[in-house]
Amino acid sequence: MAIAKEQLDSAEKRVLQIVSRYGANEEHLLQILHDVQADDNSLSEAELIQVARAMDIPLSRVYGVATFYSMYSVRPRGKFIIRICESAPCHITGAQSVIRAFEQALGIKMGETTKDRKFTLEYTSCLGVCGVAPAVMINDRVYGNLTPDKVQEVLSACEND
Image (tube, rainbow, N blue to C red; front, top):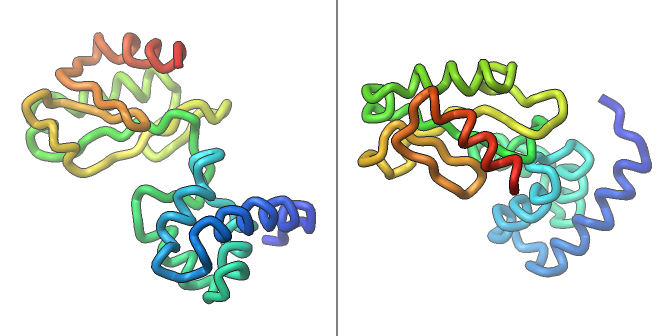
């Protein structure tokens, strides 16, 4: 995929500012990628190229880190990332019906993003809140004791953010 020069130039300025905050040492790569991704919850190809250039490390290394950790995404994601726990306690207490309710309410399947890039549905491993299973995390906020009937209420809470 060819990247427009404007995309590279725009990404370069932002990435250089972020890298200068931490230094171009590879030990800071995770935090640099986190900050680069903060604008739109994903890392573009242009941004990954500029991180590699600014830190003088191979693009393959940057891409490998960006695709290894679930907190990063090289695919566009929504403003609200809905991470649905797929651990045993959530599964046993009804996570599948909650997943179906989110999919129906948003008109997307797990792993997809709404056309308006407002919501993304993703699976996640244990959220550590088994006492309130089934649970989801939307960005940094956890919602527990979910039922299909509570899904619209949770989505409405996002609308108010």
